[in-house]
Length: 392
Image (cartoon, rainbow, N blue to C red; front, side):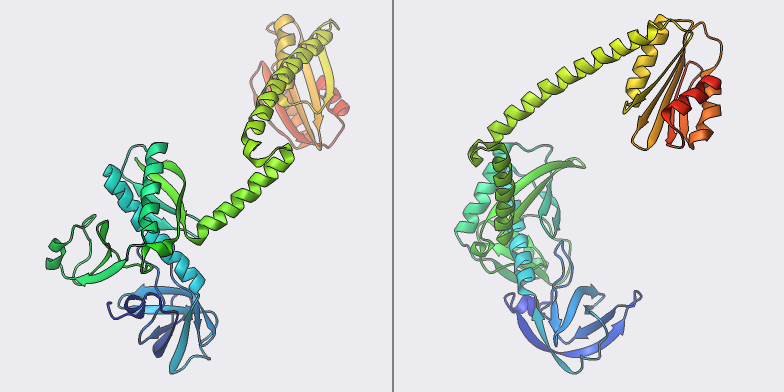
């Protein structure tokens, strides 16, 4: 392991190696095994490298048993003998920045709050760590972020060393290592000592910056999302664009956008409350108008009324008129909805009405003897459906 090129020189971007063998896996993917490689395989929370071998794209890299397989795009006719490998350096260096940033942030939480990291994931946009703590405050997040960025700014070296199990006792490890035999330690002097098989830059300054983005509860721990390096600039650019757009729509400077938005949302809540009150009054008025018809069967057709509104009108009427049956229909775009309800003195079950009219509109419905509701396709006009309900 220690002889692999990505461990020998983590900054190596191009290399030459001999093809040891080629093959096709069970998923019919072509792969190449080399005499040595600078391509890092997926592992330890860090994604694989990509790049080319003799200009043929390497799309995946995996360590299978004792060999590292380079999965190629297409067949292997262009590969033979000694090949020239070239990493997608933008991708590799991004992974190195994020992974080193994870070490630094993890160590900061241990140093400040004795909170160990129990899980790590390096995603394509954000990085996450799960820390063993019930809850974390904004103040704690700010302190950990400040400590991490201080370590980055100090540009401390990031060192690696291979040790045996016996030699581990000479290092103050952040946590116990799970591997046996030769063990690779990644060290930030006087700050973090940790067993790790991933790739990292050679100094903390190359991480550039670290920004915590948010937290969420995760199985009794706290998951923290963050970004490092170039991703901080991408995140800043995205948020700047969003903020500028919001400020433009609110016609205020960006610094006043939050205050302006709060005012609008408050006004909207008042408007929604007033609208709900007005709708309630309208429903009561319509119900009373139908009651004044003084008929045993109250029937009405509406346009663009919700099921809840139809039910409310029907309940109001049958509550006041125990001898009435209420039949209501609404056309909503290309759908029909209906409600049938009865007062307590009416013996006919409303289910009978539903059974007869649902097939007419390819509909579905539900309810009980006192009230049923349903809806279906616009196979007839709302007036025709209302007439069918009256004749049921």
